[in-house]
Image: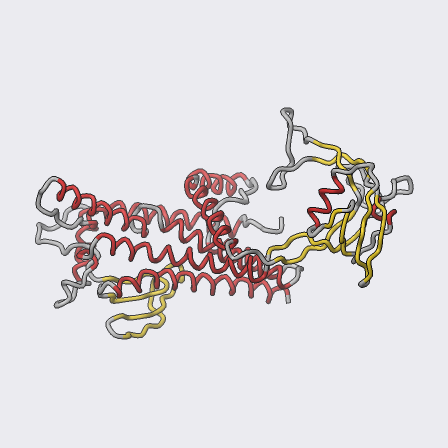
Length: 437
């Protein structure tokens, strides 16, 4: 059964990836057709064709390697002019790119080419793909946060500890000389719902915890609901040393690297977690937060990749915030699906992985290098700058920018991307990361 669940998680992520890639290309396809550009192909995957069907002038299909997708637009670049035979590797690559581009321009459709569009239309077409991934991520985050909810500690008591254990102890059970926990001594039971603490009505466990923590040694009146009835209790929190943590839950250290502790009230109450639906604005907020995290990773990508390579050679632990390949994401999805946890919890984690994957596609495709979408945007904007300068200086309009001259750069970037993908796949196979530690 565990193997089937694992495979189910992998399949879930593969289907999600295929949907994400397909919608990315739809984001290019729709504005291209809206602006009159002839689109010859809409393909999901690369390599040998598995299936295709022509509808109108466009061939839709799937290819063997589901690692991306593309649409073939007529006249991505200006047609080539007659010139002497190319000499040298890069010159040949440029000539091949021009020849392939010329083949996309059908007779009679010379006005339905990409390069003739106004700059703003070209930018919209190229940004349509990443924008679709961002919208999909927002939709997933919104369903997850507002439809299902985010886990929070509720006012329902999950358990009550029997004694007060020293901070930092590895002791798992109470000894005879350990002092009784205030909650147990007061008669608080698992299943009780906290109504008020210290005369203050509490709506969340955080509110109840804050009152207890600021009241060491003080007698507090506690009202709970038990089996539909209100029960009055008296609770006196004990003073306990607890380590301070930051907003991300990490221990706060002093100048000597030692944990900083503070005296707080302690009762020994542990709350049940429940999914609490969030406002609709939470989805976009989560998407923006994830975008910042992925952008930071991309900026530090060379160092991150170096660390991945070093972990393969030295056996050191991989950075949990480092990059992953499709293989790594699939393994994480399988691990989550097979873990011993409530189905809803596993579904939420899988949805979070899929949303994060779409944010990664959004950010990565905006990198301003060909063959990525961001590179095509830069080419279009550069042409717009040249045209604007010509108008300002009252010069003739410049010729369209011939991006085929950047084919050598494109090839170098493609090789680097393939190398990065190969490194991450090997790392995810040999030394995979785990969400469960």
